[in-house]
Length: 390
Image (cartoon, rainbow, N blue to C red; front, side, top):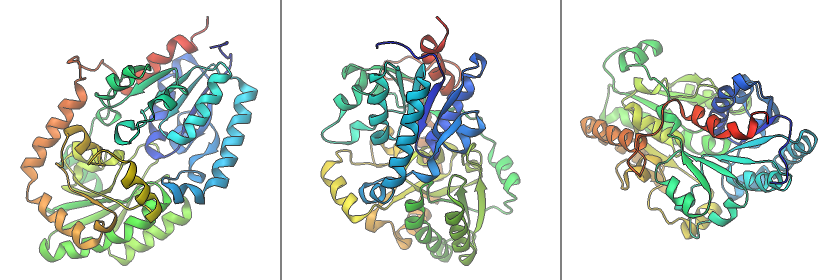
């Protein structure tokens, strides 16, 4: 480090779950009265972060998906970089969004700005694991999976396990959640979560909606609700609601600064795009059937580079195929309906798996319980020596 900046803290997040994590950290910095600016969405804005680049114009995943948004990504990067040069922030918080944040992180460190990376890149899933490249872009790391702490410390990174944000909330009971959503009858009730990025929603939502009709042939009492991410742009939201209306499925609007977690206890099962929501579903008792579709080019590259046999967080944490995963060609309506029917029959078994997930997330790999407070408060504590006045 050459010198610490005297200005604000810069936050960079690139999708909905990261935006909520960044917002929680920004709120936890509130008492220090530190100005915050950066790249984020509605959640960060509500937490007082000045949005220089809006994630709704730049969120993407996969090779061809990112390529389609490169102009917007380049604009956001230029705008954010210019602001960083003017402000010379005293610290940076980068949340996931690996490729983008690798560039930003290296640039910040060259300026002498200390970098905290929150939500570690999932290098354990890739071959070769790019730990060295990430280490050059970070000074300190807050990891949210217990086994990641030792992995990154071995790579020479000052890494700290802060607990998973999915454990921070105090969810309502099933009865309270169903009353809030006016879900009448015994169900079963199925949640549809096609994701928060435009390309994944467009690929997954029609198949999920078709699966609901097929499910009712074997489970006539089944009822579904589609949870629409508030981080989606208005055009995509309009299309999504029209598709749901055609399938006679009601839509629940999810506030971008809150996420779907508070709704999930109302449901018995969920069709969910791979991502943070898979873990939220599993912990809430809405047993997830995990789905995802990438472009053919991205999928072909991934098959050569991915070394983990599982893509969903619950399966990665438990170390086996405990929850169904339907990827690429398998992510089609009949398979979705069949797997939902199967998990509904095994509710007791999946309740036990949820308990095991919670236990593994609370306890770190060295046998010590994760510290008190929320994960966001623990990250804020790790920033304190950078942002407190000398």
